[in-house]
Image (cartoon, rainbow, N blue to C red):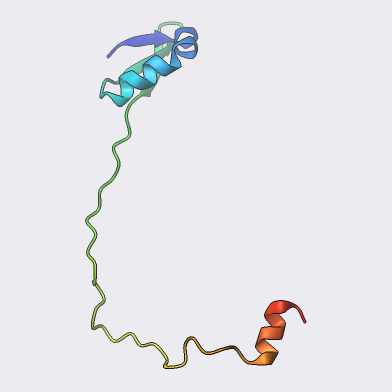
Length: 79
């Protein structure tokens, strides 16, 4: 792991980020003592399973897309 002091890390941040994104961990030191590590973030991949709840008893009212009653619509519109 390459080590850089804080001043070098500030002036070469883009280079260090490129190193980290390519898989090389970079150590940042203060007065020669390691204080931080710059590393790549691995995106978590969760498998998507479509239709997981299919047939599990959910329902949708027949009039779900019917217009709202006037008194409820008035409350939404601030009347």
